[in-house]
Amino acid sequence: MKNWFFLFGALLTLTVTAQNKTGFKGWAVVPPMGWNSYDAYCGSITEKQFRQEVDVLAVKLLPHGYEYAVIDFCWFNPGPEGWSPDNWTTFEVNQPYKDYGSRFQGLAMDEYGRLLPAINRFPSAADGKGFKAIGDYVHSKGMKLGIHVMRGIPREAVQKNLPVLGTKYHAKDIAGIIDSCIWNESMWGVDATKPGAQEYYNSVLNLYAGWGVDFIKVDDIAAPVYHRGEIELIRKAIDQCKRKIVLSLSPGETLLGDANHVDNHVNMYRISNDFWDNWPGILRNFDLLNSWSPFIGNGSWPDADMIPTGKLCLKGFPEAQGRPNSDKREHNSFLSFTEQQTMLTLWCMARSPLIWGGSPAQSDDSTYMILGNDELLHINKSSINNHQLYLPGWGRGDNRDTRIWVAESPDKKIKYVALFNLKQQPAEISFRLSWEFWKGKFRATELWTRQDKEIVDGEIKATVIPHGVAVFKLTGL
View 1: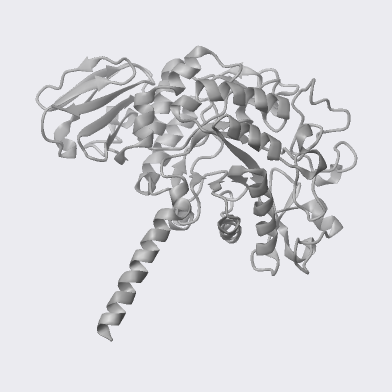
View 2: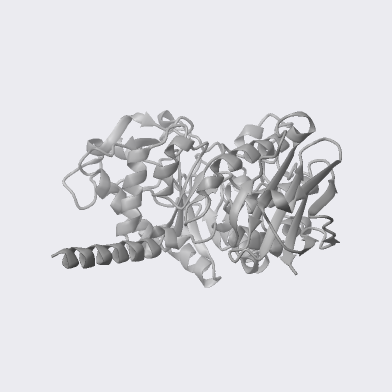
């Protein structure tokens, strides 16, 4: 009997291990990389524009590993009456519920309360086809399709009390009427305790799977309130839809107290609030990425948010209307070239997902030079032991404005060290191999300049320009 129990336990362990390797964490074994339409188009992108951007992505960034193309925010919103998708300006997408049928047309949805692409913006979605044609187009380019979705069920579906597909329940039976997004009033939450709630999310994810969706970014779910119940509903809904759909949560800041739960349910999750092209946002992410570094890897990734480089805010975001000095006016990234190098280096050393937000078709060569640094991208895709150092005296005097991140190759034969200068003036920063117990002789190469650097007495030093970085690959000799 004891032997039988031993064999049963061993078989159970092997089964669980196999499931872990083939489960949802196996769908994002490296941090997801791609492009998202929000920073360039807000909620107004059209099918024509999306296809044009995908064409550029497939040529310029897919060879570097950027494989996801994501339609963000309010693709189910046809816009205000008289709005022309072909001669467009960005409209105010955060429509209050009271405006249905007046300033705005109703949201596009089916008879079961599931949101659909607005046909005036995505004509191939006519006749209930959804994003199937766009998904096929993205897949034909060797890329994967992603979409942004709002947590919950449309208020309009609740008002009409539409049925939940395949059940005896209706929208009013599952809606969390007191649980609404604070910045977009078009949705109610779904009450995870109600019968029919799981079936509703199952029907939504089955719809997406039929379109060929490979990635969903679920908004209003990680912060300001961590919606544990709906996260679990969505996890189960994806698992039952029989398609490998990577799950991303937004926005942040996700709280560390929810780290174990989020790590066990999703592939990537925002740890920062909305990050735009400003230096204070980068500084904030140094602290956040440091705090979340114990959770890097294993198919679930702390996400520092999209990369705001290149051409941003096409035609101006709603916030820019009447405010010509707004940061949301159409512009090239306000980050300097040096600051962009620092940002990408930090994201790669911390293995954050790399989702670019600028316009692929309208961004310049310098943007692609930043995004396409394959040596840095290799750190993002394949490194271990990623962490920020805590040095003697850190946080006092000059040390408070420098940071050092380190990482290794999986076989530990290659080491990486990034020296960050957060000051307004140049700084000499040094790293001693003994701080990480690295032994042996190495050849050091800086990954932005491609220049070799001598290691003297086990120490590597660099004079780093303001807001800059020197990042070295140390190859054993």
